[in-house]
Image (cartoon, rainbow, N blue to C red):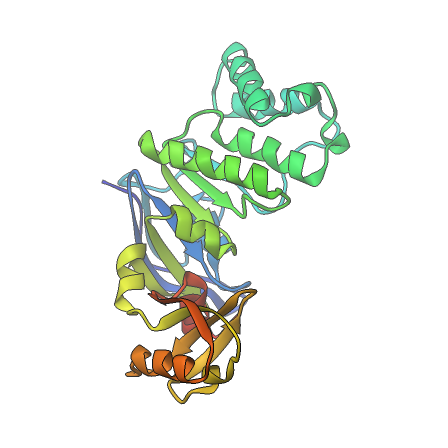
Length: 298
């Protein structure tokens, strides 16, 4: 069963299409990366899955049922804009939001204590939300989205405001949820996180999905056209005609080759330049490179 399916979905505002004829299937028990430039239509798509917005055309199903208030109850949703009550106490607001999902208060309070301790917020449980930093508030909102153990979780920029340690903790929790059978939709601009954890991606640009499918298969389809080189000495070989572009790094560079170029040509040019080569490796293009190629946005 697909956790989410969209068929020919369109949504317009004042005659402008925010989402145009989008088709998408999200397999149950996987993590999907929902990607796209600002204004591409990602948030509108999410809000239609949540039944906050109604599509002008097409159909949306969640666990093979048409979207409704009932299907929304099966989704844990973390919006990009924080929706916490700033003057409520931290644990109280978590328990209150869980109650809106139909969870008994005692059970919600027990789980809230566990989650707050796990995310190192136990000492802040009695503080008002407005007293917390942005990163702490983000963790509270994340807890509120997953406390009721929903089979489908939609997270819009969940790493916003988080330092690397807390981002890694949230990432581990998302992987745990997937391994336990939940489906996760991750909308983010952090390509490195998507590459680490997503099974599939959907790239939306100007309201259309321009690329979707298994992440590993997509990367393999682009071939190994990037060379990672670590060296000391002259870098004159990086201007070789086989090189399309260069991204300079601390200990060397990543050189993207032109279509049809032979990487051995670049290696010979590097050796002939007198540079001392310590690493020369062919790489698949990064997801960031694919994103830029498909959308024209950095």
